Length: 108
Image (cartoon, rainbow, N blue to C red; front, side, top):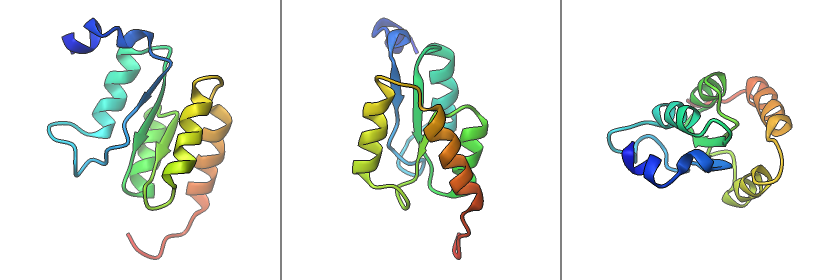
């Protein structure tokens, strides 16, 4: 955490983690979200989830956008990241939550 403070992460406009939990070591996207919300109070936070259920939990915990690699393309998420630098992701967040809530998955 000291390294993040020294890097002035508190000034970030957007914090992004595109690494899924199984690849992360010693942390999770939920923990990263909590840390980012605490250290970067003005930043919009984009994290990654492997399932719709996990994505909705991250949204409930305050994520501004949740990247789901099996649903979203990297090009789409690049657009979301770019947008986050100049405007709020609130509308994207609301639309995505509605979409995920109504989406019916056959597997998983």
